[in-house]
Image (cartoon, rainbow over all chains, first blue to last red; front, side, top):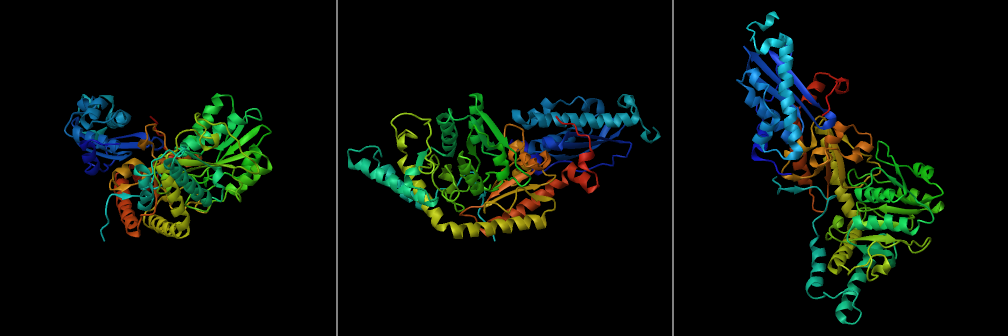
Amino acid sequence: MAYSTKVIDHYENPRNVGSLDKGDDTVGTGIVGAPACGDVMKLQIRVENGVIQDAKFKTYGCGSAIASSSLVTEWVKGMHIDDAVKIQNSQIAEELSLPPVKIHCSVLAEDAIKAAIKDYQDKHGAAAGENADDTPAAV
Amino acid sequence: MTVKTPIYLDYAATCPVDPRVLDAMIPCFTDNYGNAASRTHVFGWRSEEAVEAARIEIARTVNADPKEITFTSGATESNNLAIKGIAEYLAEKGRHIITVVTEHKAVLDACKHLERKGYDVTYLPVNTDGLVTVEQVAEAIRPDTILVSIMFANNETGVVQPIAEIGKLCHERKVMFHTDAVQAFGKMPIDVQEMSIDLMSISAHKIYGPKGVGALYVRRRRPRVRLSPQIHGGGHERGNRSGTLNVPGIVGFGEAARLARESMKEESARIFGIREHLRKRFIAEIPHSIVNGTLESHLPGTLNISFAYVEGESLLMGLKDIAVSSGSACTSASLEPSYVLRAMGLNDELAHSSLRITIGRQTTLEEVDYVADRVKEQVERLREMSPLWEMVQDGIDLDSIQWTPH
C-alpha cells in the first residue's frame, strides 16, 4: 500500500506524542477504538477558558491511524472546544489523502477529539463549553 | 558493517530465481522451443526429453515415480485439481471431505465451492501450537469420507503437521490423502511412500524456480489414484491436465528441485542457524515478544512473531527497507487479522501485532542482525507511542477495559 507523503511525515515525525495528567481538572481524555480492531487512540486536551492550550496523543494502530491522531492534535491546539467538536473525519481524510480502506482511521480521530471534549465537559458540567470556567478547580 | 538494502525476508511468499535455474531455462525460449507434444520432429522430441528429465528430478526429490508427477500452472491449480478432481471422481462413493481451518485459501475455497455443490466438509480446529492431531482426523472420518486434505507446513507459521501419521491412518481407513506441501517441498525431506501421501501439491517459485509452474503428485500404486480433470482439451499429462506444457518453466522447476535436493541438508542447517540467531535476539532484546506456532515441528526458515502492543502495519511502515509480511488486518483489504493465528487461539491484538519473517538461500547473518536492530528500534519507538503499552506499564489489565469496537 502506498502512503501519502503527509501520512509518512506524521508517522515518522509524530506531533504531540505523550500524556497529560488525566486527573487534572483542566484535562479532557478520550480513549476510543479496541485492540481487537487493531487501533486504539488516546487523545488528551488541556483547556483554559474554553480554548485548547495543549493536546497530546498516543495511538496503537496503523500508520494512517497514527497520522490521523497526530494531525488532530496539531489542529485543535488554540482552538475553542466549541469549534474543535465540529471537526469532521472527512477533513482529516482529505488532508491526509487517506484511501477508502483507511477512512475508519479518520473516523476514530474524530471520535477521539469528541470523547476528550466530552470528558472535559463532564468534569465541568455540560455547559462548560459555552461558559468558560476560569476556576475549574472549584467545580 | 553496512548491509545492502532493501533486505528480502519474505521467501515464503516467493523467491528469486536461482541463476543456475535461469541458465537451464534460457535455451528453452530461444533454441529448444518445440512443443513437447509434437511427436513428428526433433524440436518436439528435445522439449519432451527436457520435460521428462525435469519430471525425474522432481519425482526423485519426494521418492515418487516420474509418471506420478502432473505439471500444472502452480500450487493453487494443483490444490484445485486434487480436491475437486477427487471429489468429482469419487462422488458416487461419498461426499465428505476433511480439512483444517489453517489451510491455504486455495484449499479452503475449493472446499467451499464443493459445499455449494452439495458436499459436506469438516474443518478441523488446530491447537495453540498450530497442530492438528491424528486422533482428530480419525474421529472425523465417516463411511462417506473420500478425502483428507491437510497441509504439510503452514505458510504463515511454518508449523509442520504430523503428515506420516495422518497418511498411515488414511491408508488404513481407505480414504484419499492430499497434502499441500508448497512450503515444505525442497526444504525438508519428503517421502511419499513412507508418509503414505496420495496427492501432493508443490510449486516451483518457492524453491528458487520460476513462477507459473507447479505440480501435483498423483499416486499410481497402492492405491491407484484417479481424478477427474478440471481442464479439458488434448489429454496432456496422462489426461490429468490438458494444455501445452510450459517447457521453460518445467525445466526450471526440475533444476530448482535438483538444487534443493542436493543442498537441502547444508542449506536447511544454515538457514535454521540464521533464524535461531534472529529469534533469540528478539526474545532476549524485545520484551513481550511471542513466537507463534510450535518450534518443535517447524520449517527451518520461517519465524512468526508478535510484538505485543505494537500494530503490525505500523511496524512494517517503520521497516521500509526490510521486506517481511504481517498478520495484521491492515495489510489486507478485509480488516480481519490472520485467520491462521486466530485459529490458534491468539487474541486479535496479538494477531494484529504479528510479523512473518522467512529466511532463504541469500540471507546472511549480517542481514538478520540489521533486521533485529531495526525491529527493536521501531518496536521501542512505537511502544512509546502506544496507549496500550502505557496502560500495561501502569499495571492496567487490558482485558478489564470496556473497549468500544468500531
